[in-house]
Image 1 (cartoon, rainbow, N blue to C red):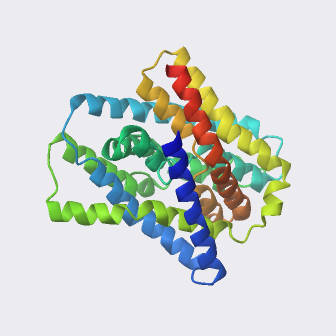
Image 2 (cartoon, rainbow, N blue to C red):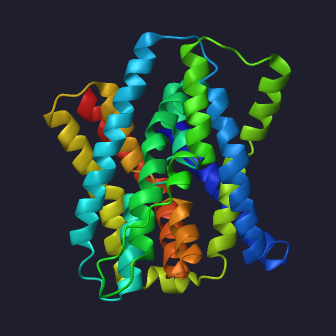
Amino acid sequence: MFLVSEKVITLFLIVFAGIYARKLNITDAGSTKKLSALLLNITQPMLILTSFQIDFDAEKLKEGAGIFILSAVSHIFFAAAAFFLFKPVKNFEQYKVYQMSAVFCNCAFLGFPVLQVIFGNELGIFYGAFYSMFFNIFIWTYGVYLISKQSGSGGKLKFPVKKIFLNAGMISSAAGIVLFALRIKMPPVLFNAARLTGDMTFPLAMIIIGSLICDIKLRDIFTNKKNYYFIFIKLILFPASVLFICKFLNLPDLYIYMGTLMAAMPSAANAAIFAETYDSDAKCGAANVGFSTLISIISIPFIIWIIERAVG
């Protein structure tokens, strides 16, 4: 719990670097988008690819497949639950953004370093990559559909197929699995270059979040009752539900930890990025990301404490 708390606090402190850079006009809205593209297309794929450079183990591959299925079931459950739970939000754009923020967690930016503490450096990212594979599929299908639909319409299903299966996250995960299954190791020079690039992911993600939330007044976040309702659903209700269902189904401890921990992660930065990209309420998305990240400093160690007692 202490190690996870330390990791979460360390990452959150980097958010202030992003805020500071934005205040000094080192970054702006345009450069933040560019940094997001750098992270999604370069640094995070390198992080995922190098995580698969471990000795082949058929059991680990089987566990990874199980985690992928767990991720699929979890995301579909979150989407269905969020659709009903956020009905009280009358503003349609905010209704979409609250759903988006609740369904899609920070499984890579913050989830990966937490998994590293729990499972070790390589294995943590290895398991996380399988979980995030369905995340990538779902966010480019349901996520795009959700955030782009208009009020009073059913929303036309416009799925960008290339972005679903040919995005950098999916390609790096697929390539990593192939290399892992075929027992192919990258040359040391290439591996070290890829790993150093991948190590940039976590601080870069926090700087991006800092840049996104720096224009939002903290007073507006803390005085908005809807934000507390959102936090309860995102950081307490969803992980507690996953933990209860996994225990009820008597799933192995690995799946209990993976499912509950990933559900306990704060909102994905993509919630704010997608809201801005598709002309929705980007400020609401950034507030959800920032507020849930702040509260997760306390909630993630608490959820781990609950998991340890549930599996013990």
